[in-house]
Length: 111
Length: 112
Image (cartoon, each protein chain N blue to C red):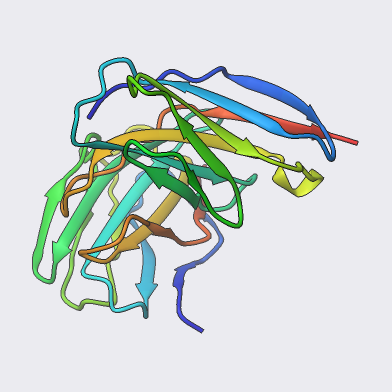
């Protein structure tokens, strides 16, 4: 699985958009980009994933660059409950492939 | 309510004792996983199982053992051979299709 690079921490004001970047310059053509988050002392929670196109669901939007070497997770209106560690993972979408969770980005949403 | 349960939430053991962490799921998922998390770190894969009666070592399997006798259950035993067992242990499961791993609430193990 391709390695990802994320900033260790970020701050965001409550109500503003949180934009979390992820670099995955060695991503292969068949690897998807997944985002999970982990609120303190809980299990990680799936947010969104994508291959080439931008994706949006009720939680977030995922913007993937045209060359697929980086992506951005967008939380459009961050709340205090969005304070968590966010993990960007790239992996082949094939059964049996494992998720590799790096240190992630610690997002602090400030009042 | 479907989901993954891990018990207990907090567990204390004396050094040198084996301890077994429970993980149960009623989601009818084939695959189950055990991860370890140390403070300020990401998750590291210990063992995983894609089907009943079959499991594979992950990145840090030494000092751990598992069994998968039933689809719903994937217990993890932390043996006395594990040099630094104090950590947060997370269990997860996944279907053969779909993108999402579902995680349990975790067990925080402290070895005194």
